[in-house]
Length: 404
Image (cartoon, rainbow, N blue to C red; front, top):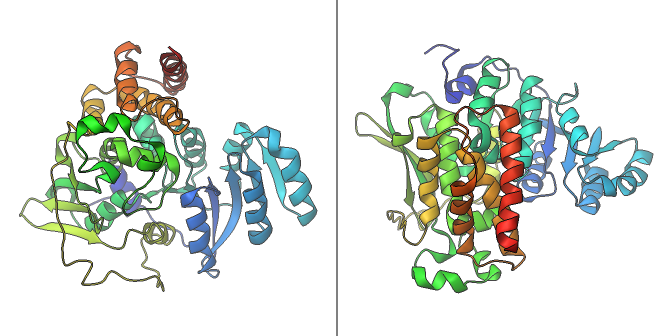
């Protein structure tokens, strides 16, 4: 195998790697679930990593606490109304501060950052990730929407950059680990596992009445609210199918999802000779975070290991598309192409926010996505500007559907 192959897997597996001591980390979305766990991982390896930039959306108090403890070179709040509080708290400590979407994007190009952890949720991760790629920064990718919305553009940008992308999502990290040392042409299929969420065994006709608290009660993982709802609807698996297509250069028909309620096997790869590799571990995001930050180096950890008792019963089921019709959206988006996935993501973000605010029912999330797909113009070969416009118009339209 040679560098220069088209799939992102080959790009981040085979490009020449520079080692930094310590590696300087910018965390986009530092106050969220992945961001806080990333800070926890970094704290255990002070000789390997240091925090250079912390970026949050609106949780200014948490950002101030993080920055005071970690002393990064810069702290940024996307919500400009919170900037004065940030500035007054941190500038006396010698920490640079800024606010707004442009400041977030500009921070991706600083010369005091080596790797960007994209830990933000949703479409907001796309623009700063593209800026980081243009600046040649390595990306520890936890924001699946970046590749869901504009995987074609991100892939093209990576071909022109020295950046490497290493996945942080547990499923894609598992596939990445299983593919290490393997010839891509020997891969028969990628098998993405799903827990099934809190409603795996619930009758479909009861889903209309589930509450926000019901949907946020994930059986295995501790995640942010939006990601947890995506897990309950299984929209997250649709997104992970799309993301896997771009990350690993895999044909859509070779990517499948399977329900694995125990969340012990994080994903699998089947090869042409019949062999299957699986990555097993406890349901703890710090494991893939460590692996990504360490450039696929296995850093020693004192975290509890997987026990034989936990592995004594591993079960698998086919996804129930009657109960979870959203899982079909991943293959639909890849088959149709164009701006389809961007429409799905934008409608889903608005719908999930409305559900969390008790404005719609759980089952309305999927209905709103399909309604947006029926009404939004299809663009076969979108530009970046087309994606921006599609995202904005889909959000506006979906909000109108909810009001109506």
